[in-house]
Image 1 (cartoon, rainbow, N blue to C red):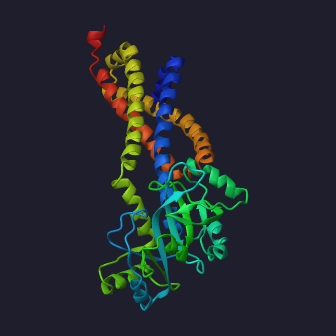
Image 2 (image 1 turned 30 degrees about the vertical axis):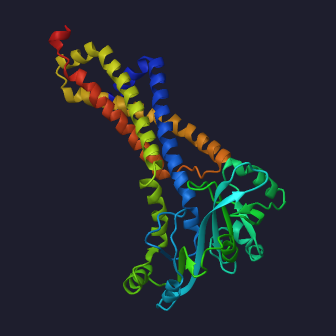
Image 3 (image 1 turned 120 degrees about the vertical axis):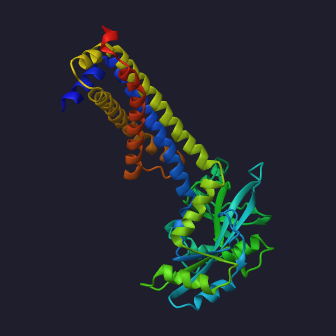
Length: 384
């Protein structure tokens, strides 16, 4: 440990209670930032899990589509045209509709997102869904997302027991025979998956040739960007062609920029940063004020301001690191608790951990920079 670092630690540890209170405050700020960023990431991940699970290299959508809950139709002929291009191995189509769930057990109608897939193909890389493909071929059969709004808990409990429930979707009686796990949805109360034929029965005004999402699977070894570019250059501009990753970002961008969700969680992170900064500033400012005579003595002995400034910044670094450690540990427990309670994919990753550590240290350095203004004004002649 360097001499300045040792001295910085001695100054902080002299008042043990003050140090513990400061670390608790910094730890709280760390937890607040972690939880805000974690909730934001988890909700985006839940909103895009369908997109991430699609069995496709390229995705076709209507350019006016905004998100999964607001997908415009386009002609399925575009998919058949894409099939003629070199490198294209297979095509698939997905229907999406926002319907109304009505059940005798419920006093209110609920908005429910219905996705229609071809049960003869693997549309989604979700094993819980694929195990029901044979049953989905039957008329009016569907499966329900178990991570739906709390109002759906009684229905989910019944299906989990092995019972079949028969609600009405848009006035048509359907049979819910199983459950799967995707995640919370921002725009609907629940998610229902059925066959493409059954979806067209539920939304009986829809034309079979008008689809919402077109899926293109390429042959092994084919360059995705090159095929995508060729399709864009040769197909009409009434469709938008995205890579699989771009389609995931398409959904995420909608919720980040067109709703309050991104703003709310970003604001929460900023508030955590500000709270921590104020706490660190109060600790460092009080510490500098209490030891102003000692600092003045060092200046009188010939130590320059830069030496003293470095010592204060080292105090800030110590506070940041020591406050981060318990905050990180408690966050891991809170993530696990939240995941079990809500089924949100709350998971810690290295990138997030390093980002919050950087924010914490930056928060402490900014507070230290403000606090040292008192130190710079210290004049040995005035002190003595």
